[in-house]
Structure formats: structure tokens, C-alpha cells
Length: 82
Image (tube, rainbow, N blue to C red; front, side):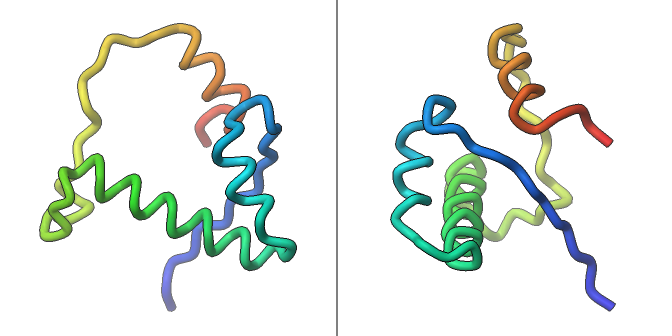
């Protein structure tokens, strides 16, 4: 049995206008979900320095100074960690 991660979220246009506009191009939920999946994968590859050989288990969070504004926005958008 394969593992599945199900995510249900809302995105307001004011939160991220370019992402909102990109996803609104698709009229069906499945097509939007697939586009979001593609964008997320491209973003992950970009963060990894476009080195797909690096396994996901080797990914480490990047050390950054925590910006309370971004932390609050992330918490508001995605909710608390489970």
C-alpha cells in the first residue's frame, strides 16, 4: 500500500496573487491540484539547487532568521502542525 498525503486548503487572491491567478486558469479541481503539485515539485527542485539526485531524506530545513510576520502568515494559511 502506498502512502498518501491529502491536503485541503483555501487560497485567497490577496495571499498570493500570482499563484491564485495561475490556479484559476483551470476550471476543474483535479486540474488545479495537478498544477499545484507540479509547481510544488518545481519549487522543491529549485530549493535543492536543481539536484534531483539528492534524496528527500537528505533534505534539511534551511537555517534562516525567523520572521514573525511570515511565521504568522504561514500559520494562518496552513494551520498548526499536526
